Image 1 (tube, rainbow, N blue to C red):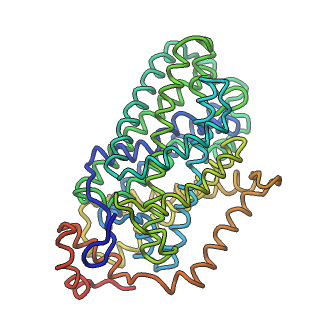
Image 2 (cartoon, rainbow, N blue to C red):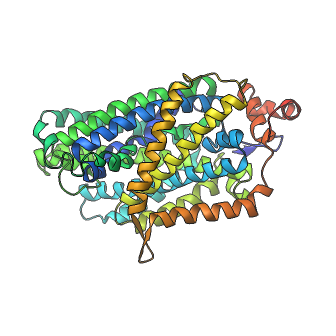
Image 3 (cartoon, rainbow, N blue to C red):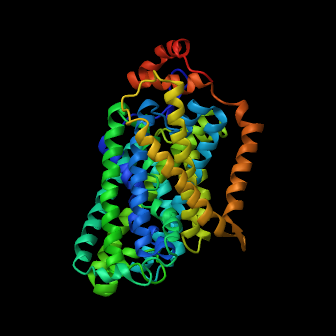
Length: 481
């Protein structure tokens, strides 16, 4: 990124719908290869299936609603920008913090699973060393620029989808119906459905992250809905196949693993067979796609919050390749430390899911407020209002409650030799963040007409024309602060 002649920092417009689809699906695709299977412990085979159906309906309604927001306000801040415009600066800040919780804790969880897959393939390689090495490597890869990063994401996503297709074909001939109806079908009764909700969310977690590349899309008004809707349909089909095949192979029994797909195939083909190894190798592409994609997401969110004034300004400094270098490295360092100290991904998943569920609810509230507050806002894509966002917000609130009540209250994170309750971890993040906002951040906020008005010009002109247009934007924009 570079500063324009007007002094604004702008992201390069280089992405097309196929790239956005790849980023949206790629951010999520690792959720097909691990993480969701922890829900078998909570809900059993039947409970997790019902939870996954519930979450699929939620995400479908949410993505259609989110497409309206992201096309109306094509901003790298994504949800924080929507919340600021709808509810004011503090709401924007808190939504941004929720996104960072999601996008900072998801990568170490994915990296832990990547280490487990590598260890499955090469037992001599310690999973922790593999975890840290792969995480650091892809942080560095993201310094090459968004177009190159998006190309890597596209290739890795396609490979991961091919891997799922191989898994579906290889596993479908060995599916047994009796595996669905064992003593583990509903180990906690129907309450297990709600207990499994946080892990069902992992099937789709971060699909909304494509919105954080909105400023880098060539034609955001048309391309974002195409990328998002194609992405959610792709993921829904993958979720059905992954869950049904794994449960039908007996993958719902026993202790959950960080590499459930190869283990499920190994249970019927044997660990020495080439198919479990092949799926493990290709599964690495899925994990890499999500790790790589979410790194893109957190760096853009950090950049946007810093550019707006919410976070220290050095986090939005741009390299010659138009990359927010410090916004990439600082959250990445936190993620690497978390990954190196995690014994397994369960608690990291819950933290990421909490941040996501909180952000979903705040984004949907923003949509309703903006419909009332700014009825004339240009909306190239309009969701079927209020039915679809109404369904999304009801299911979203239920999901957030389940994440808090059944997971956050009952889990601890090993830190510095102690088991710290996840509730305390989250409270610490929000309290410290709020203190920073009131003491520092709110005094340095970019005026809202600059934050959003420049984007209106960018949507119709190129960066080279911005300098001559920015004064018009400042005088003509009629946005309240």
